Image 1 (spheres, rainbow, N blue to C red):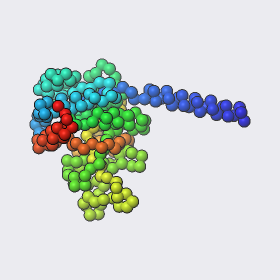
Image 2: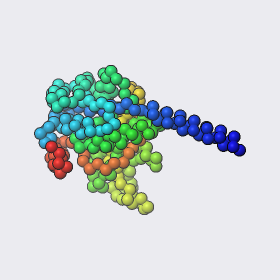
Image 3: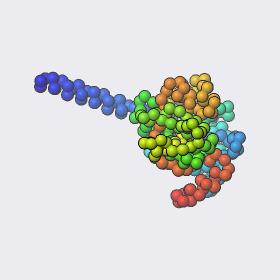
Image 4: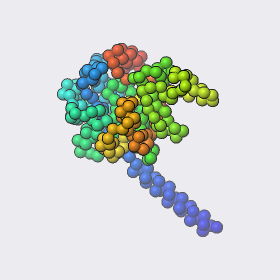
Length: 281
């Protein structure tokens, strides 16, 4: 019995060492990319809009720079006005093509220009100047701790009166914290077609707002950008649905984030008010 117990102990120790070695080698090298384009149908020049005396994209860069998991951080743009404003503020800039159809592909192009290789790419929305660096750190760690996922993101509770708003992207997740679906419409829906409390015993369960921040496995990101568009992605106009439609997993973390991004000019005043309340300068 002693011999068997010793063998089992040795096997357990060997397995633990292998696991520790795997975790030590897990996706460690992390780069943050802030894609920024000047042209916008609803808000031209949005990255350069003044937020308490600084361009919004610079505010976002300064906030993201406080993350402890990012090994490098860049603004990726095709516009010299944005690049100049960022460089004057001390930000690192990567120039990308004007033909990039979205922020994801701009991130992929930008990372391809770097001499150093990275394991994880974080797409940080330039119109989220109040995105907490802790949220960046949390989604990076979530991807590192989820080897079966290729993508991680964050959600926060959504006020019921905002559930019907089309510019609020909703998300539902499974019991293990992986995304099931995203939508601009009511999600989850019900027979009445109106936002209402979940049935008992889940009455306290919130609707979930998807935050724009996205974290990718680097190899998957390169593959993703070569995948053709998918039906649900086109129907909802949501890039992340292409991940789910192709059978990949998205890990979702829950955070308490009360500041929405700047979608339209009238959102600027709200952001500045929140920054004043936080004592931002």
